[in-house]
Every structure is written in C-alpha cells, then in structure tokens.
Image (tube, rainbow, N blue to C red; front, side, top):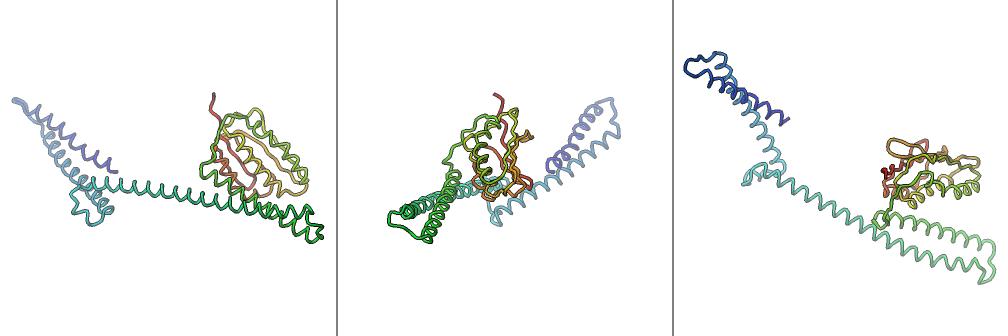
Length: 306
C-alpha cells in the first residue's frame, strides 16, 4: 500500500537522526566515535536515499498514470500538476453523476405523469362503457335474450377488471411519484393483523379453505403505517385465497427475528405474482417483503423504545 511504502521510506531517516545524535555525542573532544555507529549512520543515509527515491518514484508514476488515464494525452500541456488534474476530473465526474441522477429522476417523474394521465383517460372511457352496459342490463330498452345478456354481462365484467387494473397501476404511480406520505407509528403486530381476520375468514369460507392466524400479543411493537401495512397484508392474503384449493389451509403467524418482527403467510402454494404494489407499500414504511418456496414473509422494523 502507498501508506506503508511511505512509512518504510521514513524509517531509515529516523535511524539516521539517531545516528547523527550519537555522532554529535561521541564526536566531542576526548571521546572516540564507535566504528559501528559510523557504519550504521552511513547505511541509514544510503537506505533512506534509496527507499525515498523508490517510493517517491512509484507514487509519482502512479499519479501520472492516473492523470493521463483520466485526462488523455493533452494533460502533458496542462499547467496544473497531476493531483490538481485528478481533483478536477473527480469533481467533473461527480457533477456528471449528479446530472445523470437528476435526469433519471426527472424521467421517472415524466413517465409517472404520462402513466397517470393515460390511466385517468382510460378510466373515464371505461366508465363511459360501463354505464351503457349497466343500462342495458337493467332492461330499460326491453327484454334481452339469454345470449345477449351473457355477452353484455361478460363485457361489463371485463370493464370492471380493466378498471381495477387501472386503479392498481394508479396506486403504484402515486407511490413512486411520492404523492403518498407514510405515517409510521408503534403498533403491536397482533393489533395490526386482527382487523384483517374477520374478512379473511369469510373469504376463506367462500373458497372452502381454512384460515388460521397465530400472532402473539407479546411480540414487541413494530414501526408501521397501519392502513398501508394492512392493505399490503390484505392484498397478499387475497392473492393466496384466490388460488386456494378446496380444503386448503392458509396460515398466518408472527415471530421475533434479528431484523425485527416477521409476519409469515403459508399455504403450500406458490405466492401471488402481482406483488409490485405490496412491495412498494411495505418499502415506503421501512418494511421488507421476502418470498421463498415455503411462504411469504413481511418483516417490520421494531419500534424504538419510548
């Protein structure tokens, strides 16, 4: 390392200073300079010269090579020395990095705005489609035959699904654009999960599945935005229930881990695929989503003591 090279180059000079002090002492009248002291002083001086020359030459070559690599052949005509050139190049590189980062952020905001505008426009058009379909299904224009009712019902269902997908994209855009402000506060994991259980039990019953929740009230407080955390957990559970088989079991439990408190969802099936909104909702409040073969984990940070 450069620091070690320079330190080693200084050591012979230290020995030389000590040798000079010895020479000054034994060189007085009436005293005889020991031969070994003269030899040590000469060797220290020569070693100091050689090491200082080698280390200085090495550092100078490396700095010059770095300067040429950054600034090109024209650097030889630059009135600044190599260290000044390197400093200027580093500052220029940092400015370019800041400019690229600002451009990327501006591009993300622009895309978010375009996507939000497109979602709003398509949402309005879908509403214009859904209204006539609703009027037709209400028999305002006479009775429809069975095939017509099925086609209109299918069209209305497709419009509802498209509207839901647009709302999903709109939520992601709002989160990425920073239009949603989290308000994390200390809360017990059991209190976070409890409001979700009745609705999940009802949906599990309709799907002929079994839902069990085991989150101990003794778990420490976590730092979370309750509304957004419940929305993320609810979407995860809905995704599992939508793919649940009759007689299947969906389990939710909690435990203390090194990173915080882990809420685990397990049912033996692969996790839902549409996790983009869930990840963003959790990331916004400092939580983390982990997907593995045996379940999906949500890790919340532990709230600091009051």
